[in-house]
Length: 485
DNA sequence: ATAGGGTTAG
Image (cartoon, rainbow, N blue to C red):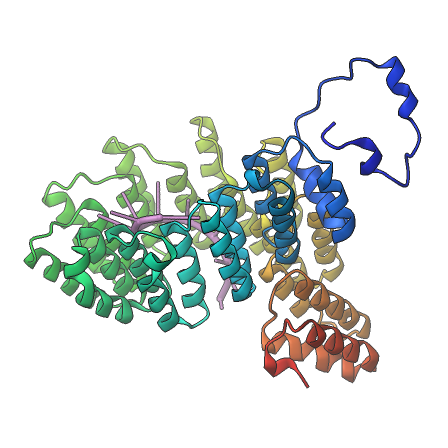
């Protein structure tokens, strides 16, 4: 056993010590099961948990990381778990585990904990690494603190983290993905000498302009890059290609694709998949199919992602049944569908009102050792709620909890919004409960959602509940100031 | 997480 039995179940099984006489050679310990431990952590209060941890053996760094990942959508529990490990089995914590914990603290905007963890990581000589700083700066940028993120990046070395071209490029990418491309470009111009900016740096900036649909500017960046003696790579071209599609410039995309071929670029599976997806989402289903066939004709082996792109396109812009035909075709060819493949089909079926068949596919996933993820559940819940089957949505929500998938922020938003459509006061009580639960799990509700639930409770004569929520949450100090009365 | 391709919701 992983757990010493006496401490494991102190209330229910206090006796059978004597049996050991008859069992001199206990059976070998079963492999530690992350699910069991995760559920134990979720159900147990902090103090009891501390006792249990005292008696836990057989920890491995991998197990610790797996559990942290499972607790991803329950920030407070994840950090509680992390600090218990830190106290009892410090040597089990890896750099990856620290990165997870830091990411979670940052997501909860608990900056004090974040920097404590960084210091602790450093004290244990586990980092912080450039990856750690990519995580931290990404979180700061995503909540609007880009200037602060720049300062953090520039002071990385003071935390014992090397500052080099790679970490510079990562940071530029963080800014670009948060649509702060102008800021990234300014930084590039300031620091390109110091860090010796390369093709990757410029490609990242070009991608940043593509993400905000400014393809002419992206092309300018590439021109500048070439003038500085840096050569584009296939990745650079694929970035541009995707940019044209994103900006709705289908003709430019097509011309660019032809030009790539004419210049004897070694067009790869990513190029083709970009074309299939790009054409497809703009409704050009036949052209998407043609490109897919051309890929096979050219001897480029489609990947699972290629199939996913085609299936998605068919499900969305053509007919789910045609998507399912391609799904069967990929199975015939020996491909192993992944969770995205299933999610695309499930969404297609839901969208077509075929909820029962969508549910069948979730079962099929299980049979094929492909675990449904939170996105799978969110799709099903959303469509049940949209179809007015709120109870079924809630049922699926409950089921994901008892499994090993915790709801995320989207799940709560979907469900809470659904609690307003029927104008039933009972629904609002559920909304209130969900709100309390999500806050307890470290999610910050949007101001709009929070006020909507509170107002709803007030209007339906549930003042006491509303007041209780406010008192609890402001007492915890977890809510931003605008929520306080 | 040094840059590119599949999921979100119209």
